[in-house]
Amino acid sequence: MARLIILGSSSAVSDAEHDNTHFVLQGDHSVVLVDCGSNPVVKLRRFGIHYDQLTDMILTHFHPDHVYGVPMVLMHMWLLGRRRPLRVYGLHHCLERTEDMMSAFSWEDWPQFFPVAFHRIRSREAQLVLDNADFRITAWPVRHFNVPTTGLRIESKGSGKVIGYSCDTAPIPNVRRLAEGADILLHESAGYDPDGHSSAAEAGLIASEADCKRLVLIHYEVWDRDPTPLLDEARLSFDGPVELAIDFNVYDI
Image (cartoon, rainbow, N blue to C red; front, side, top):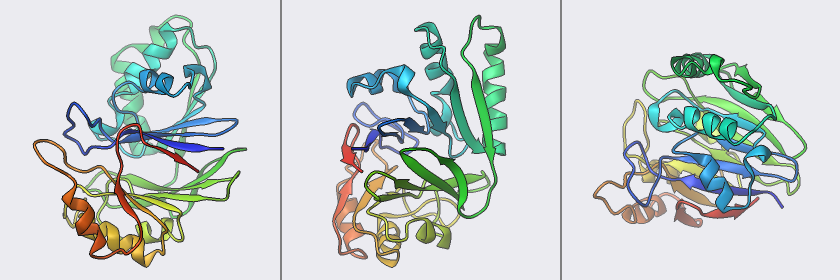
């Protein structure tokens, strides 16, 4: 059975117990990393996932907390001897800067480096990102200040389950659309900001309007702060199950 593994759950300022938000989708034939905080190779090993099993990486937007691990994960796999190609997906704005970041490390001079293919996706509703034997993933433009950002709708082909991921965003209609009927909605709850973030109550309202079965709050503030009150805040607008995403939580999908 496919599973979704939370590798990090915090907003931009992490702490010792919460890494920055990123997660992995593990299927029978593929492993898809969504965003790249810290060093995912180490975390994947914790779940018995070999670095050579990583087939794809999706980058939602170019903010440090979502992409700073890219140089480390690529270097780590290269030094361990990876030769298998890796596919990386994202908006042009994000991938252009990611390639520039790697050029700053002169990665073109790293000997015997494995192939990395960058696939640019369009910023439009229900844009296909990838469609393989395990997952069908589409991207939806969301609002995160002035940075082009995409949320995701993930369909698990083995079970038919749907996961919505808001990414960092204000609560706009596209989030409700990508979450429509989702079995799990991963929704950020960094706090109210009409230009780029959502409160837990707004996340609950999206989950309710989209008729989601389960709401999992992610990308929440943790520095000198207890995030558990966010649960009651979300329950003001959503009467289904609500929980906090916690690092290393596993969801069967």
